[in-house]
Image (cartoon, rainbow, N blue to C red; front, side, top):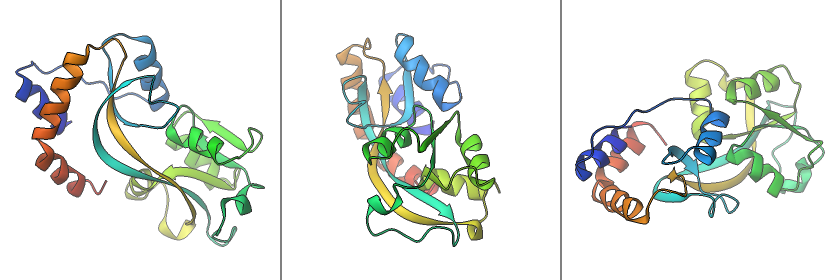
Length: 196
């Protein structure tokens, strides 16, 4: 949020209200409400034309994790196609897992990371798709112990952006991008501070 505030200040804009909402609700709002921005959103091929973008803010590694000792680390993704996988609805993980040729029967959608982690910990799914930063958050919040899981496959690396609803004028997007570019040092410091 510091970066967003710095951009507003650079543009001489007053601070706008920031709502922290579950991912699925935020995604629904950016699609249905005009003049909306959601951050940070992974810019996937399926999303590229649906929104306007400012960034990139940082890169995100999406991985598959399994309970320690249950599934061997895979050399090829096809080795994991017989397993169930938890994803977060409307999150990049959902599309990345579909693109990785898991079937809809193998994919278990959840509303948020907490539900996905609960299913994973209860062994109701064999795999969980998650970003490395999300995994670090789960560990830091004691939702998952390092000894409980292991990374079995790197699915994809995607860049995250500020995503704007399509109705936002290009002049605003271009101004945000220029202000963002001007504050790259702050962005790099935040990436380092938050281990993104």
